[in-house]
Image 1: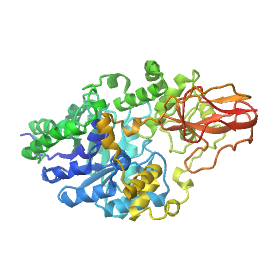
Image 2: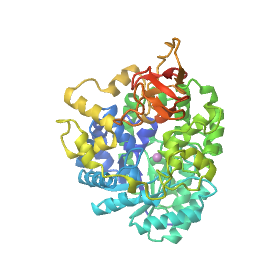
Image 3: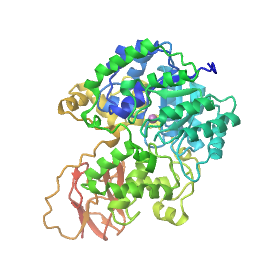
Length: 561
Ligand code: CO
């Protein structure tokens, strides 16, 4: 025994692990049947809430995520509950006003959440401020986060500087979030050592994925360097693109003289339970995932992102272009200032790379999200974007340098006023709606009227798509391209056709309106991002497709005369 240090373990089985391996399809009943045993296993905390968990609960499982939290809390009295909070993005893909962030955190605390791991995809401290302040205000534990990535600007010094900024905001602990599983043991040792030196009193936790096969080895190196807590999953829900197996990490650490205080008998019981559940809950589509994605060691693109790219290309009937997209992606990421690849930047960079390849000319098609990203609406990019490219990407959108949320009007009262009468049962419902309007409305309707549960139907159909790769529903509805008069406006991609650029917003161009050449007149949503469609000529526009309908590449959306 060379040391007596205690290393704590966070269990991710109830959040990240089933998000990584089971398309987030674990149900509240599944959790409750084993929750007491998990609570008694000796974990530091139980991660059980996050963006996809919340969304899938309502969208596919027809469950109330707040109720899930309350139920877990009722059983798990010993072990703190933990959630992943996307800073100003809360659980969604965009910035929310401060009042929504504050109230969300307040209600999460009230319903039983203890530890909030707060992160920002760009590591922009301004996007963490409000959330961290709220967590402290309502008595939660605020864990700051460094999103780990590699690039010329992501140096150890830079990470130490970011950590110090978060320390000044009052965080209780600090997480290194290695979402892609690219943190090597050597780099972890170097980073943890530097952080321990610069912030000697700050406990450090590490989150990683086994995607590239390195995470368990990295955990040991980081423990030796002074990290005190690690994220693991029960073995049945571990490895592949999930966390390292807790049973193995326990033995690895103990063999080096660390203590984990985990109860082996409890872990065995928990694993037996999930082993049985696996047959019922693991979607067939994820069963054939490769055990180790060694490609990550070469190109650092996480497996989850590659499967998204694959499904996006499949939607565009262009699966054969995947190698080109994988080559393009690091270039797009460099152009965009080396953002870490995590929601939502992984989506923005991924889709822009796909468009750069499919359109034949880089940045000739730019999503609304890329435009807003370049203009500073997601926060400060880690490295600046070259001025000429930035100008091209922003187009008419004026770049900002302030904290993005400073531009947002308060949102809670507005969300409440938008809800149809007799829809909500508690204030929490307003937050569900503010975060996922369409999904929440679908759930509220189901709650009132009943009907089938989408996840049950998938189970019979034998397929479950991850919420991230959810298809925009592009079926081949083209083909009815009879002779059109005037200049046709064509769908550049398979996707869904919209007349406005956001749900609830007015039409971008009315039927019969005079439009200018180059003016955005409608939207094709593909790969979950909005692609504005510009008028190819000036004149009177006539739309041929109904709002919300699936369209195929090349289909005539409108004509201009
Ligand atoms: Co993760």
